[in-house]
Structures are given as structure tokens and as C-alpha cells.
Image (cartoon, rainbow, N blue to C red; front, side):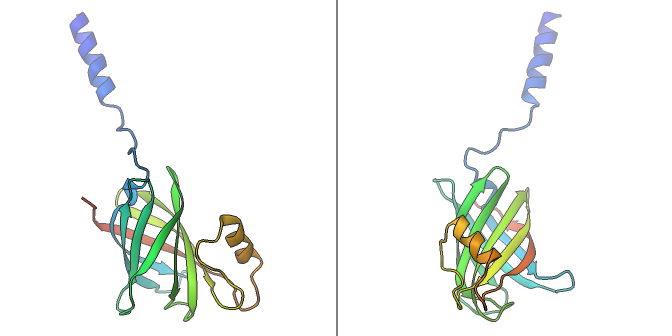
Length: 164
């Protein structure tokens, strides 16, 4: 009887949820195909992003807009936690804004789904520069210089190929 009780406790103990990955960047690694839109009626821009988890626990990668013929846009991690990621891309010429911008995106991942919001700020007119602190970015977003008003939107993506 004790043996059965002990076996039952072992089975219950083994059935617990798997621990989170040691590297918080791992859930984001892979090839993602997605769409970003500025408004609900906007058909949006389609893109592919290749994300890699670094040993330091950051996410790096490149985004390519579908059919644009433009060079891939590099991305950098600004913040990463168990609950989400903030990354920055650019400067690049946005097909949506028709201007050079830097984009900060805040996203969440669950399995093979990635979704979130983004803010594009023009680099012209006293806009933004790469790698601004979160406080500097927030200031540029909430009190933009004339001609550098933010463009906000949402994105969704599906992982098409996981990283090895």
C-alpha cells in the first residue's frame, strides 16, 4: 500500500508544468510571419522577422517587409521579461509612414503566436535616434516635436519555423 501511495505521489509530482526556459529569450526565437496595421480597417503591412535568442538572454533579429525589396531591418532588445518583450527597429523607411522612422514594439508570445503594439516615430524634425532610453523615448512619444508625431498600431504573427 505504501508503495502505491509513493508511486502516486511521484506521478503527481512529475505531472507538474514544465519550468520556464532558463533563457527568457528562447520563446521568441524562430521565423515569424506577421502583419502590422495602424487601424482596424487597415489591411496592414506583411513582414517576416527572424529572431535569435542570444546566450545573454536577449533577442536579436531582422525584419523584412514582404515585396518591398528593401534591405532587412535590424532589431534590438530594449526590455525582456517573462511577461513580454520591447524591441526597437531602425532607422528604416516605413512603407506605412513613407518616411524614415524608428519603431518600438511591445509584444507577448504564447506558443507559436506573437502579438502586440508598436509606435513609429520619425527621425526628422527632432524625432528619435536609435537606442534612446525608455524615458527619452516616452518623452519623444508623448511630447513630439512638430512633424514627428507618433504612428501607433498593432501586430500579430505566427511562428513558421522554430530555431534549432
